[in-house]
Length: 98
Image (cartoon, rainbow, N blue to C red):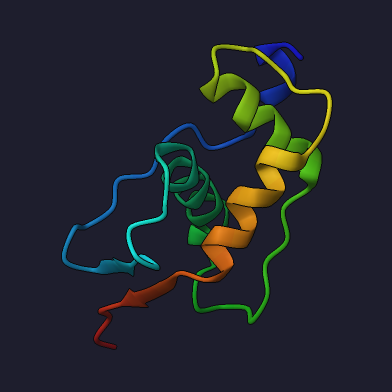
């Protein structure tokens, strides 16, 4: 996959440290898990609070994961599914005052 195909993907997100709190299940999140969380947050951020659900194509997530591994793709989704499952067990709190 080339960088050209991934131009529309967010490459980074500046988070206010005091706004987003992550409560890990016994410190089980890897660096890859945290990067995936940031990627998912960056995709949802423009519409955060404006819609109840967000979707991201698996191909976009796989593209991001490959870029995070210096362009190395994977033949299956096992590692990605593991990251998603760990993130689903993670409590995320947004300290937001409206």
